[in-house]
Length: 391
Ligand code: CMC
Image (tube, rainbow, N blue to C red; front, side, top):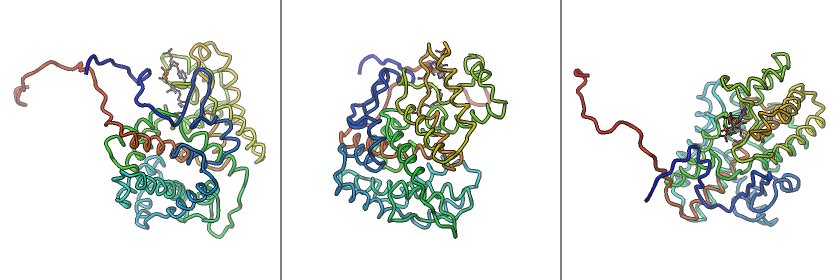
């Protein structure tokens, strides 16, 4: 009731109270449930962080083991889901495939739709944490013409993801600690980011009491866009375009500043961070380490560093407080890991899954009302209908 104010893009409108993630954009602070992102990326593993985000506390050893066991028990998918995977063309974008498969899980797991008790929620949560990596791996493997297999129960959560993605028939899977650690870190850095576009989508869809999987599928679709999670694919495509165009970063800087040119420097700028993105700092360092450890010489990394240096010294970027964001360097690491460019945003979704779940659970437990923004009508005033042959 009262006056409706319009705030396009919700730049200054809070949608909820939340105890999950704290973010101070001016100071570049990001904390999950009070723990700094720097410390978590250094000391925790992804599953611990998932537990922390969803349930509010770091798990004890017993809680962690049980959580992992419950997730492992759910790391299977109905064989009929394979038929759906098989039916997609190889050219399908993986984000469209994974959003569809996540939605399809609702049909195969009807008991996960109407969840009201905490116990029902827990079961739906471990189901999706178990099944989602299988679907991610199958999305990749279908594109590559590889068999749709399962993982290995004896491995850690993240290591198993890599195994499911990259295991080849008749070839022993060789575990690479550098890759496992790098992926663990990347997933932690992406795990939550308060009320961004996809998380707000998950909360608003879930607020109608649509099931968890349907809400997550909507979140995946929101993440797909190049202004949000799709930026990681767009960054790499941009860096490759610059390389193929002779590596002239200045030319692309000029394009980004030209208001008549729709081109934006992908991986730069953020709605909330106005001094630096703390995730980008950690990822930049990780990119150096991973490429060094793997012995990869990637000219793309040099172009990225050159572009960053120029942007940080350029008045246009400085005035608008545009800094590299989390997506600027993540693609370079994914590429070094052998993950195809169009899978990058799927990897982001894999990381963001615990955050979406935590925010959905919080919204349901707090019994938040259905999300329903208002508008100010600017269309025609009342008009009389004119039959089609008189128009
Ligand atoms: N390149 C060139 N100019 C830019 C860029 C950019 N990447 N980002 C913002 N600007 C300019 C923009 O044109 C505007 O200029 P002016 O004031 O002269 O009109 C000013 O900076 C403010 O930009 P805005 O679009 O009003 O800011 P926003 O908060 O609505 O958008 C953003 C934030 C992230 C969508 C935007 O910075 C952008 O499009 N960046 C590139 C895409 C990207 O990297 N997205 C990933 C975000 S981080 C991952 C995630 O959490 O999703």
